[in-house]
Length: 244
Image (cartoon, rainbow, N blue to C red; front, top):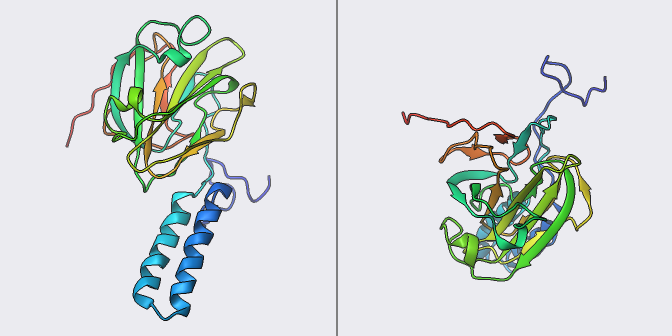
């Protein structure tokens, strides 16, 4: 076994390091660093120090950490880091509904809100083929609001497994976010937890669970993209948590 491989038996070597910065964010970090350097050269330390903080925050925003994804087709994993703010029974969006999509019956939608401090790389919740991608221009309302799912700038994904199971999810821009950046295209075959895109500077991701499948997370729970199990397929159990 390579020393880079880790197991739940305590094997391997683990050490902390700053997560790599995704290429999409490096240009923003370089711009911030250049402005900071310019202020420092001109002796404007009162501006250089705040820009140093902005540079560090920019690099942290675009961090792209490795994730340990469950290798089990029973599970649907979270496509986003963040806080579960909504769990509702809704009709799927028109762009990914119908007989070639998720159908037209109500299904459980789990919404994960990403603050500006969360990792913003989004990942596929199941393995399969990208059957459909639909980008919709829209407003930039608070992504925490229910109506953001229908009014904000957004991008829908439909993923289909080899056995025909389909899962849809939607990237939604928020108050600060101004661009949704896709990494994949229709026809791509992806493994569970693979990177599919990002949303710049605060946003939300909705995931639509297959019929007969209930959420395994609750409102107020924090999720990690590619790791947190959102649902177990065909398991419809209500969860109860008691606030302490």
